[in-house]
Every structure is written in C-alpha cells, then in structure tokens.
Amino acid sequence: MKRILLLWLFCCSLLAIPHPTYAAERCFAETGYCIDGRIRSYWEQNGGLPVFGLPIGPQETVIIDNAPVVVQRFERNRLELHPEKKPPYDVLLGRLGVDRLTQQSRDWFTFPKGQNNNTCRYFAETGHSVCGMILKSWRTNGIQIDNKKSISEAESLALFGMPISEQQTETLSDGKQYVVQWFERARFELHPENTAPYDVLLGLLGNETATISTQGVATVIPVKLSAANVLAAFKANGLEAESTYTMKPKDYGLGPYLGRGTRFIIPSLCSDCGGRIFDFDNANDLSAVENYYVSLGKASAALFSWTFKNGNVLMQINGTLPEDQAYKYRDILMSFTP
Image (tube, rainbow, N blue to C red):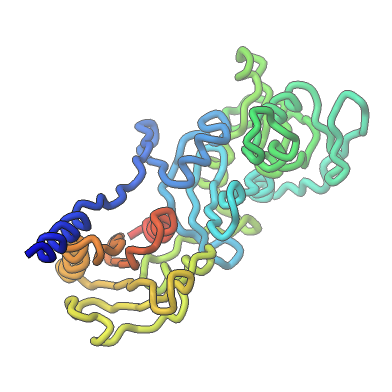
C-alpha cells in the first residue's frame, strides 16, 4: 500500500510541473505589428524606436543570398535572425544604406572622397570622414557587445557600418533638402529645425526599401509555408534537423494516421530524438493530431512534447529540448506567412 501511495504522489508531482509559456509580445498600435523573442530583446537593448523605428511587418521567412532567413522589417532597418551565431551576432542588420542607393541606381564607390584631418574620424577602408554632429550621433549608439554602459567604436560600427559618402545635400521624400550622410546600414540626416537630440535623425530606409523593388538589391522573396520549407529554414539558420524522412504508418505510433508527416532528428539530444512536422489539407485533421500530442502531455509531464502550429503545418518536438532551443524552432515556423 505504501509503495502504491508513493507512486501516486510521484505521478502527481509530474503533473504539477508547469509547462513553459511564451514570452509576451510587445505590440504597436501605430502599425498593428508586434515584436517578440530574440528580435524584441535585440530591438530593446540596442536603441529601440530612435534607431530601428516601429515594426512595419511580421517576422517572416525570406530568401537572402539563396538561403531562407527569418527577418522582421522596421521603419529604419531590417533585422535578420541567425541563430547559428552566438549573441549578439545572432541578429544581424540589413545593409539598407547600400540597398537604398542601389535602388536609386547610385554607385556609392563614385562619391567624392573625404580628407583625413584631426577634427573628423576618417575611415581609410571607404575613403570617407565622419564629422560634427553626425559623428557625435554615430558614437552615441551601438550594438551592445561588451555589456559596458559606454559605447565603443566597434559597437557603433556593428550598428551603422562604415560611411559610404561624405555629408552632402539631398532632396528627401518630403520634397525638402537636407544635409545627409550615407552609411552601410543607415542614412543620417541633419534636421536643424528640431531641438537636440532630434536635430540628427536616421532615415526611414526600412520603409523606402520595402516599397520599391529593383534589381541589384538583396533578394527578399517570401517563402511558401510547407513542412519541407520549414525544415530547410531550420538548417539554413543553424538548427539541427537531420536524417529527415517521410513518415510511414509505424512512425505515427498510437497517434492519428493523418496528414503528411516528416520525421527529423536532433542529434545533440540523442540518436533517435527529434520531432515530427506535418502538412495537413484541412483544419480538422490538424486539430486531431494536435490534441493527441497535447493530451499526452497533460496525462503525464514525462510525455510532454513541444507542439506548435502555423496555418496548415503542425510541429511536435521532443519535450527534453531546452525551452530556449524549442522557441528557436517555433520562431522559424511562425515566421512563415500561412
């Protein structure tokens, strides 16, 4: 009797283990879009609204340099997830300064070069100098690399890149002329009509590059949601998804034999650990399979598995996968537009 009681108490303790919950989204009524996960923490830790602007789209998977990458577009830049890299380099910024000039058919290599003097910061790599208020603003912001409060030059370079022009007068989208300077990832603009620190602003390159499409710019083609494309995005973004094969009836176990399933292995967990990802033709079949895996986890914490869905695709992953890793797989799945 005592052994039965101990077994009952053990099972209850398993059932009492709380399952992790998703990190809260931060949503912006101005555009109707939200940020979460690694992109949210990166946005908040490295300048937020003044540096990146508001989100102007959801997280989505696009093709960049012939590989699927999870990105989110903002008013002033494009944030790209690269989970195969260590923080802070697991999020990279699009080279929107270069992209925007390419869209305008302007060759920045032909821009007049600057001079090396004691009052400016000269970059021999590009032949341009950064001076005055723009230099001060450039040095004020950067990607947090060393966890120190002060901003190092390496951190400013990581955020904005190098200058690719001198300060020059240009007519912007509002029809007015401003003194601007182009960088690899930004355009600094002087706005003397504003009080400091808003007398130096960053151009809305995210908006400009998102609304105009021409040849020569980094290719950003949306990828169709399917199990095969999600698996390809896992691998392209450095996540394990090995030994994939089309599931046969025996691979479904006691679960409903519905949908088109693909098995994949996560070798770092164990030689046979991993997950299943399904394509479904209708929502009822998806719900039946989802409910099966969720009910197992409710019956016993020992049978818990991560279960995520997006559109007609359902993914189930071994519950021993650490939470932060499971969310990386989830974020890529959810980045696809159904």
